[in-house]
Image (cartoon, rainbow, N blue to C red):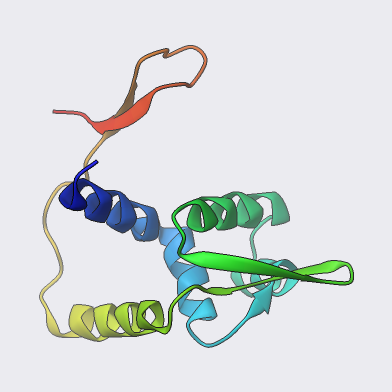
Length: 119
């Protein structure tokens, strides 16, 4: 995989709205799943799903303490990226591009295969 492909995958990962909300909270400090669930008012299973994706992209890391799992950003530059992006979006005109539709290439029935832009 090329650097550009890695960057695109990273940006797609953080570009999902729920994941972006999670990252904004983690930019302020470590949080447990229960806190994220409560603040975002979303199901624990959904938050866990998104945290798993962020972990697979090496964006967050976890730490277990007793019964709770805590998450934090793997690099402080990620917090800057999130806050800088938010500040930039307040200054730019709203984006007018159409959202990209993604479809799976490969085994459609089993949900296996790579997710690719529909072009």
